[in-house]
Length: 306
Image (tube, rainbow, N blue to C red):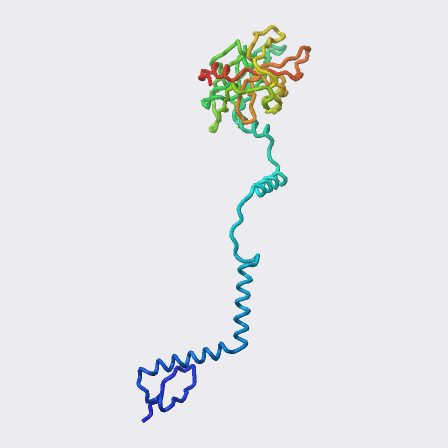
């Protein structure tokens, strides 16, 4: 009896020739393979499939050589860097050097007030004289540099830190030949920062500097200028102590700037503002200010010289 072949349900049964039905079982796979190759040759010979293959190969070639295809990353050139810098400069306003210098030393700046008891008024109240100057923190334990003439003769001294904290302060050392006084505050801010000091050995006329303080009690105020000269001498018109080896500068300074820092554009303190030259009776700035080099000031505070 002829045996019926088994197929999957996806295709209808196909009649098997008699000779194949009686062929040995080992010949069936070979016959199936030959049948598949024949069908593949007939499919590939179809014109539509040939053109489809050509179109696909052409598209692949175009993709590989076209601008939209994958390409090696381009090396960064100097022109690219210049273009990026110019884009930043034209689209973002950068702070000036003076602004950066002031911001660097700002947390170390203090307002210094010396109170002097005066005569009693008609009602019996004691009149208090007040002198306002500037100071700068040089050690984070509350050690402050200022001018001696700001606090000399004061009955009490009050310092106000950058964060607004007020504290009594006492004089711990003086250096009259350089008009310097070292103060120590009793109360300190939690995040008190000491200013960075820098040697004046490489300072030259023309270097840009910033003077920061409380001129006429207004501040903190910032003025910018240059170093005008080095190793200058000065004696106040009131007959004060002659001073030597001073830094001359032209950044605006007025009464109240005394004791404040003279700062480089790197934000480092190179001097303590101590005097202005004005041959007239007016106590205003005419373009010549003097600062004590920070080496002298650091010595007054017991700090080793640079």
